[in-house]
Each structure stands twice: as C-alpha cells, then as structure tokens.
Image (tube, rainbow, N blue to C red; front, side, top):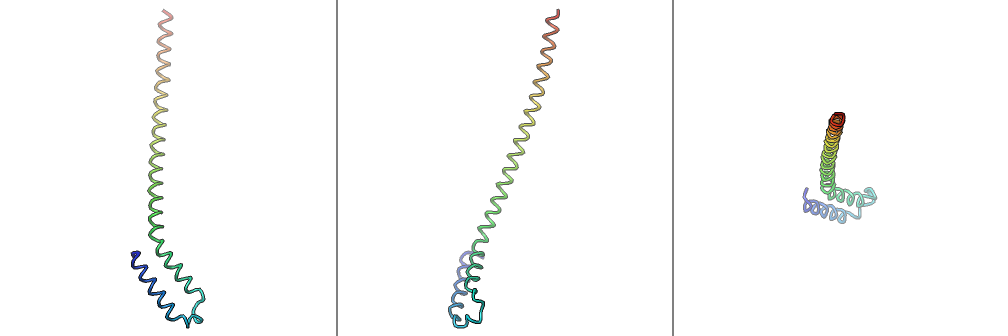
Length: 100
C-alpha cells in the first residue's frame, strides 16, 4: 500500500469509529488504540524494510572490506617471507665473499 492509500483507509476507519461511537461499549475498549497502532505499523513497514535492506547492504560492504584487508595482510605476510629469504640469501653470499 502507498502512504496515500494508508491515509485514506485510516480516515475511513476513523469515520466508522466516530459514526458508531455509541456502540463502542459493545466493542473492545481499545479498538481505537489498536486501529491507530495497526496503521502506524503499516506506515512504518516500508521504512523498516528499507532500513533492513540498508543494514544488509552495509554488512555486505563491511564483509567485502574485511575480506580485502585479510587478503592484503596475507599478501604482506608473503612479501615479508620473500624479503626474509632474500636477506638470508644475501647474507650467505656476503659470508662466502668474505671467506675468500
């Protein structure tokens, strides 16, 4: 339902409640409150759905960022290992050169 349709339906229900106010003793005493709460929930449904979708999208984005950071950390670990091996190789070559 669109917001306009919800407003129209709410006005019809309010008019019916006012028209039959004399018979209200026969109804649930909270019928007006229940009706207001129902229409409030109906109005907020779209907002809640959009909020939930936005939260899901943000979570997906954060998961992607986390994955990229983990990949970057793994790449750095691999590069550090490469550099450590290169240092060992160069030290070994320097030791051999100094022994001559």
